[in-house]
Each structure stands twice: as structure tokens, then as C-alpha cells.
Length: 378
Image (cartoon, rainbow, N blue to C red; front, side, top):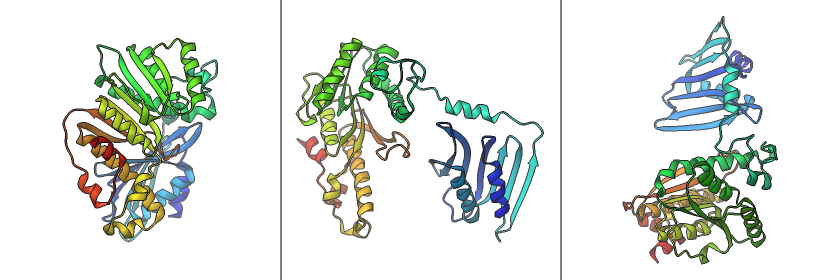
């Protein structure tokens, strides 16, 4: 494989079009793997896309890690590698006995691969880099010329990703009256201002929005900014999620990183109000980790780290099923890439009034008593 490694070291650059691993061995779950170059913050990475039945899994690697990954895959899992670059077309074949054959053809007319990478780098966001938005300047995300500051670029991407979710569910929200939105645990309100700006200024929808948080100084500052921009229908309240009550129906409930059972209180409030859409990114799922006990799973759960991660996943899966039980259509989605934060699961729930599913048997199986289950029964 040394010659293959040398070839990959030469070819893994911006001029690469793609690499395809195919002809999997019997022990390999994946049907194929595709590799392409991408630019992330001016740095070259390689995106690996793995196809396993209906699943598609993405991950980004440095050049060095990508070469190691490709060599291992050719040794253990795939018998063919096809590489296309601006300059070469290369095929690597591995026989059943492990014999490696490599055929390389040089191309006569180079193609413009760099342009494709530039397109990847300059992805069009809803809040565009280079267009000044007052609240983004005041919150420190961009400067007065509308240029996003480097240290806030992840936050900028996060806001835009969330707005894409809002765009996807816009058709579920009222069009004949004000959209009522509640953001539980709004913090410094990056997302609150972004959602209000998107609905009001970009989609030109009438909206009434409230941000809720426990930090009094933050709430005061957010209200000052809202008044400064003339956002008469955006206000912030200093209050605990548990203690907040609304006399009006809420159409969209947003909760980003509400800690532990605070997410459950937010979800329960949303359900009791009959919220048409819930977008929740949970955080710090400790409750189930302290409760879960199951003889059938004891060999798995005896490892603390495994128990912690499984408990977190079980928590969000139970939440999703409980929402389905009361009439929501629920999807578990990836919010942002793992490289930016481990808190990357979003629960998206759209009210359909089609009650299904019963998670009670599983809850009994793991001997748990989740807060959301109790809140929805009350």
C-alpha cells in the first residue's frame, strides 16, 4: 500500500474532484464511500460521505487523517478506489489475495475545481456576511461594515442554521394574524433577535415574540437593544420557565440548551398551549442518568461514560415519543456539526393532532420516571 499512500499524498489537494471507494467486502456494512475537498475557514479539509443502506454519514478530516482512513478502508473493507482530479484519473484495485494494482491516466485539459471550492466557502446564508445588521453589530458578531468577526463565526453559522429550520416550518405558522413566538432560556438573545429579524424583516410577517431568561442583567440589556431598534413586538422577561404563564396561545416555542429538566418544563408548557411548532435543542440530560436501572443492560451501563451518553440519548428519544403520544409529528435532527458542540440534537415537533406511540413500556423497562411524562399527565 506504500505506493497508494504516496499517490494519495500527491492527489489530496484542492484540485481533487472526488474519490469513490466501492466493491465492498462481505464484512463491510457500507456500500460505498465518497471523498471530496472542502474549505472551512480558509483551511483545506476532506469530507467523507459513507452510505450504509438508507443512512448517509458525513465527517470532515485533515489530509493526514484522510490518507490513513483511505488506506485502512482499502486494507479491510473495499476492493476498489476511483480517484478523479483536475490532472489525473486513477483506479486502485485490491484482489482477494491482497494484491494491489494501480492504473493512472493523466488528463490533457485541467478543469476548474478551485471554483467549486470557492462556492463551498462562500455558502449563501440567510443573514449574509457583508450585509450590516444592527443587532449583530451590537451583540459583537459583526463590525460596522457587516463583516462577521472571526471569533464569532461559529455563532454566526449557528444562527443561520437555526433560521433554516424556521424557514422549513414557516408554512405551519399562522399567515392571517401575528405569529406568537416564545424563546425559553434566551440568554444573550442571539437567536431571539435573529428569529424576530427573519420573520419581520425578511419574511415580512407580523410577529409577537418574548424571550425568557433567569439572568436579570442580560434581560435588561436585551430590552434596551429591542427598544433601540424599535422592535415594539419583541420583549424580554426575567422569569423561570416553570413560573411563566401565557393567557394567549403560542404558535412557536424555541428552547436552546435549556439545562436538564428545564427542557421538559418548556416542552410541557408548549404542549399545554397547543404550540403548532416546537424547536428544542436539549442540554445536560442528567435526570435519567441518576434513575436508569435495568438488569438486562447492566453490562452496558456499568461503564460511566457509556451510561452518561446512552442516558442522554434515551432522554431525548423518550421526549420525542412523549410528544408523538400527544399528537406531534417529531423528528430528531442534527443542529450543527459535532466539531462545534456536542449539544447537537434538535427535537422538531409539529402539531398534527394524530396521537400515536406509547413509550410507557420502555420507561418501565429502564425503571425511570422522566419529568416530561409527569408534567404531561398533570
